[in-house]
Length: 487
Image (cartoon, rainbow, N blue to C red; front, side, top):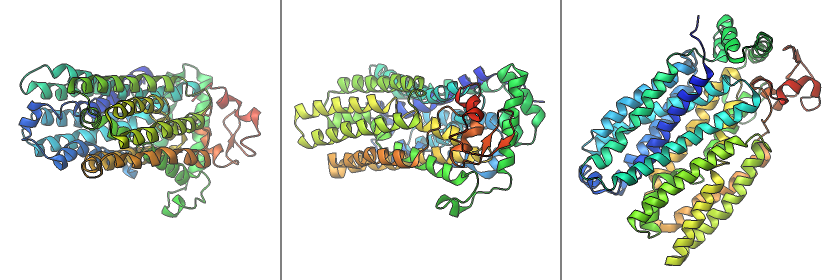
């Protein structure tokens, strides 16, 4: 029999995991230029610095791929999140005590693997334990808000420690990451697992108990249980074939959903967000020409703006739908990024100041749109039997693209200067046609009804039995999902 499932504890446990992710994304960028760090790491060159920063990203990709592997679904959502936080603790200890680039990279690899476990599994756990459709999108979306809070807090802590002396100026900010990992484990431990996972593991009694703990309503638990079992029945015998990722002939279109998620997240993280936030202080100080103190203040302000915008976007993501937020975001981001590139090309002091303003404008748009929406979309559109694989592979694209940009970025800065930003401008533009032509609107549907978007024959009756007909035309049958009475 599973432990009591407390959705609030699950939510806050995953939030702490994302705070840890955001902290790591921000903390190193603020200490790279400090004398204490440069002394301890023996003044690393550009390539070594890029590897120190980017090793976390490549390791996070590995962690996501491990969490997406076929055998990983046997472990459960809860255990993956706790295991990730545990690995992060060991990595943080190694990083905080490092006296060479090799030791620091080793620690960041461990942190990255643990982070991959958390970010690949946490959104699934939250989506599968949220009580209503209308709450699911905002709650999954604000996980990225907490990641941005972690980044903002790290930058402000870094700024405060610029007035400190000695090795504590960079070691203590890095060590503070362990607090969030400990909180993640403490909040996760008392819980059972997701009801969807129990049904997937052929443990219907445990799944039913978990549903009752989520809804506190036997009738609603019965209805959701029937839909989960119907979805699993529809997916019986379907396996992922490599050819389906190009021409998907399956009933549930699992490969299509995974492919769409991988491309969506990959495009989002080729727009420049990791490049900006890992090297923000360096960008403001070295390439825009601001004074060190001013550069640190601007970095903290930008990360704070990102956090606020992500929470706002998550709060209102049910207004207008997923596609509209992404389309408007891509269009406006393209304008700001193209202007940013043009102003950097001019190279004057006035143009550099205007470029900084364009960068803030880009962050203002990205934060409520392309920051939270990809996580929301991939966590809710994957079929249950392949949800761990789909979300894990989708989010692994984030880390692979982030590694590419963060590792190649400073080298590109050194060799081609401002022209490196053309790369990011191109992907801001590409986002619009991709969303318009390939993504379907997932707002307002329960997790079990997402199949209707990809196959009109997969329609459920409100009593949980399987039906057939048009998914778009049978309003009576899909009313429960649209009204947001359940997730």
